Image 1 (tube, helix red, strand yellow):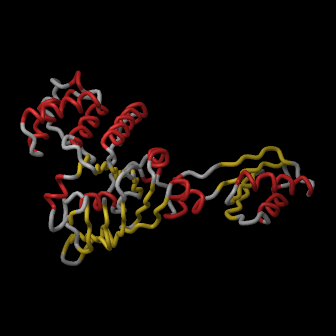
Image 2: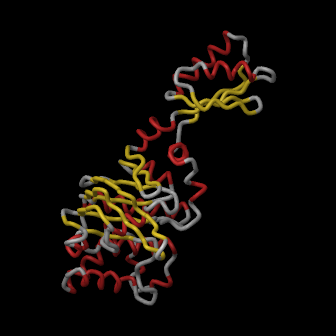
Image 3: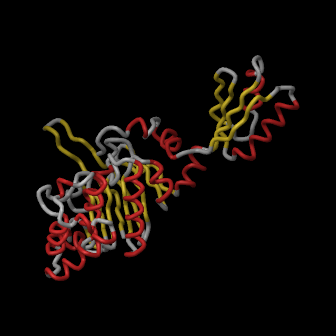
Length: 322
C-alpha cells in the first residue's frame, strides 16, 4: 500500500540555511496494516505524511501510495486516500451534513449518492442528530469524528491520521478510536497514524515505526520493540545497610544492565523479568540479604523511546509535532 525509498525533504530557510526535515526514509506498509509513527517534535513525522498525501513534493527519493507515484500521479493518489490532519477540516459556518455531502461531490459522487454516503457516515460515527448543526457548535470530540467522516466519504483503502486525538479528553479519545477501528474493519482499510499517546500505539498498532532526526530508527511490533530495546526492570528494596551487597548481586544477573541504587532500592534492567526476579531473590537469601519488597515493571513504549533517543516522548508531547 505504501513503499518509500530514500525519501527526503529539505526546506530552504535562507541562502545559508537549509533544514533537512526528512533524511532518507525507506518504509513499506502492507494492505490492511495499522502502523503508528512515533517521534519527538521536529522528527519529520508530519512532513513525511504530507509527502505521502501529495501536499508537498519530496526533495529526493521515491514514494508510491496505493500503487501510484506521489510525484508523477498525485491526483490518482488523492482519489485513493483519506487524510485527517491536525487541524479541523470542516468549515465552521457550514452544517455538518452539508459538509459531508459537499465532500462527496468533490470526490465525484452525484448528489444523490453523496447524500446516501453522508447518511451512512453520520450514522456510523454517531453524528446523525448533529447533521443540521453548524460545525462551530460542535464539541472537540464531535469535530474530530466529523473530520474522520470527511476523510472516509470516498471509502478510501488507505487512511492517514495525523495526531487524530490530540486535545481530547480520555473518554472522547476512546470513543473516537472505537469509531475508527469499526470503520477500519468495515472497509478493510490500511491506517497510518502519528500520535503522542503511547497507549494508542501500544494497544492498536500492528507495527510501530520510530522516527528521529528525519530517519527511521526502529520498526517492529510494540512488544518486539519493548522486548528488544527496553527489557523488564526489577525493583528490589532491602533493609538498611544491605544496598551495596544487593547491587553486587544484581550486577551478576545474566544480561543485567542499568543497575541503579537509590536509597534502599536497587533497580536493574533485564530481558526477562519474571525469570530473573526469583533468581535475584534466591541469590539474596543465600547471601543473607533480607528483601523487603520486589517488583517486576514491564517496559513501556516510552522506555523504548528513551532508550532510542535519550529523551522521553511524554516530555516532548506538549509542543506542535513536525
